[in-house]
Length: 124
Image (cartoon, rainbow, N blue to C red):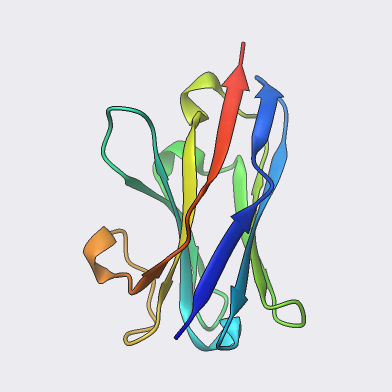
């Protein structure tokens, strides 16, 4: 069983940066894929970025060049560095673990465990 806890969200001005953390417990984070999703009010949850067991990274088109996902095995934590934030990035950001098939997927139903999320609000 894996438990995930996100942190690092907050209020930031457009153009600013935030770094989100996804701290894992129960199983080493290097043994499964981790993804970041987001959900804005009234919208569907969408894939943002992910990192595989072999550290291959994947990004949604709308964050390429602005967001970076990384993993620190020693801290059992996955990060999402978000730069050049836009108002439309405002959402609840959640991390997820894909354990049984440790490959990054953009489909929500493929992920096995979810955190509670951290709110990111970007003001103009």
